[in-house]
Image (cartoon, rainbow, N blue to C red; front, side, top):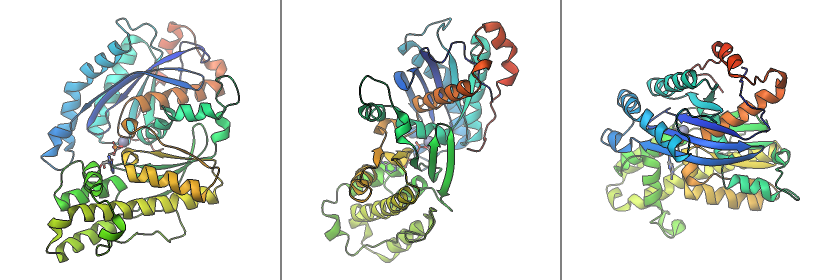
Length: 386
Ligand code: KG4
Ligand code: ZN
């Protein structure tokens, strides 16, 4: 896909990101130059309260809420970034094109296409998982990149590759090998439930609220001495010794279900069950990540996706890499950028534009007229694969 931007990519670019893949309506504006990404605004309208009573996201309800929220959220993001009508200075729109709930995605994609046409700016479709990966390029990751450099502020991103990214969200669990910008290889994924989905279902079984991940984590945090209190409760670590990079969490969920059925007093031990469930997920995720990073000689390990907000996963991954993979860098996005947001989508858009223009630099157009002619080429299709 060719992406045409009005300016030379060496100049500062302003990108509007739009994300509506699930139940968060989000818009953000970022300013980028070189490897520096600055967030000017990052607005999220969450539908958690609406879906809470159903114990999960209801797709039709989510799509209707996106319709109501999308324009106010975009307006807010533009205003906070000091961009006002006729939005001069905006260089591109990046929008999540999939995977996700199709009716939710359509609201974001159609809005982005309409605005791109009206404002005559190019549009770039972003894979949601790729967006999560680029959350690592937002602070504090950028600070880590900078600290590796010798002098000045030039970031030597070459030194971070190959990167292994553990992507753990409500819909996906995968290990992605990134050899360079835009080059991804999925080396393993879940055979059934995603890690976030497992957390959500565990929370339903324990009746502790929605969304499940933060609820399980909050109860687990009440257990101070995990070793002692978890002696009686033991859940399996599925596929931990399998010599592949695949995952499976449905068996763990079933194991919890039967453990709760057997234990007449489980309601008195909710924190302990949460701690053990969380630790089982964390153990498997870390073991597979470490093995893959070691085998594939990765320079850097990154975390991404909603489950990357989990404190135990963040801390234990960091600590394990320090002891087992000395010299390997660990980059973890700030908690606010782990769950769905549009800053990560805009950032992925920026790097896509940059890669596209670098490889086809002669094709970069500078005038609005030429942009108009190329409008037909700027398609966004939902549900493209990574
Ligand atoms: O990336 P995300 O916001 O949406 C998807 O793309 O799926 O991830 C949402 C998932 C949910 O399953 C939620 O329970 C989980 O991330 N999650 C967590 C935590 N915060 C969110 N899981 C474990 N611990 C957390 N602190
Ligand atoms: Zn997500």
